[in-house]
Amino acid sequence: MLVLLNKHRNLKLTKFIAKLVECNHFSQYYFDKIKTIEVIRMSLNQKIAQLRNDNNWSQEELAEKLNVSRQSVSKWESGQAKPDLDKIIALSDIFDVSTDYLLKDDNEEKSNPSTNKHHFSLSWVQFGRLNSAIWAIAGAIYAICGFAFDNWNSGMIIFPITLILTIIIRLFAH
Image (cartoon, rainbow, N blue to C red; front, side, top):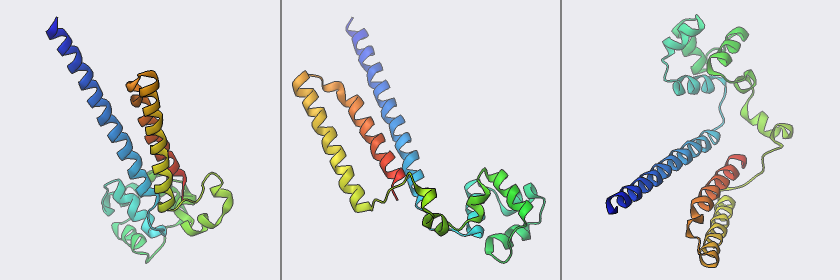
């Protein structure tokens, strides 16, 4: 019987560790997204180079997909030439991005309020303060649930929700 209890505890511990690892991958994915969102403003040539590198393609591989020479891709990326409209459409299909993303300057999108209605401004300092407040509230809720209801397992719900809330706030803040 004792062996079964230990196996059950080990199974619970293994599942718990698996969930922690899963949460870590989840948070790492969104923190990578945050870094991607905050990339320095890019022009068309920089976007083409970045998208190509993100897909781990050489200039020659991209050129083959577009039926152009490697030198054409090189000129696009260096800013010496711009792709024709049909190639821009093909690039948007290959990279699965909109032609607006490729063609519009990021600064234009920033100045257009209609494209940013669901975003709000939040500096890193403000985000840090808000993040601290959210985690303090989560800790207080955890302590209240623990002492008042003798339910110390509520942390399994409270802290992942807090992490998700923090990530969502950061994703929608500029």
